[in-house]
Image (cartoon, rainbow, N blue to C red):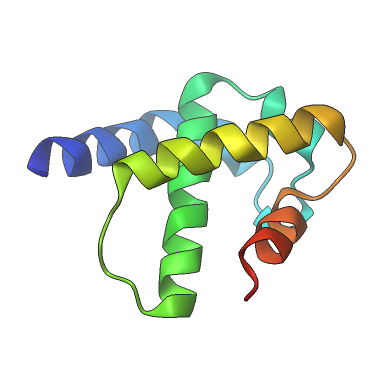
Length: 95
């Protein structure tokens, strides 16, 4: 588990400059996300996981779940490049 936390922190540190230009995650489009490098996409996915975890009170990091969600989001985004990533995530995770 410590390996995953270290990897996430390292990815965040390396990708931070790429995300600095985007800033507002609510405005991030699918096309912008898919045009990002792999490290930036990893940071985005961890941010989304943290965002959703905060909403639900979940304190468990589920690497397989993040990987699965990344695939689902990527498939949606490939078909909907102008869609907002966070709007899709919110709709897809609403009860």
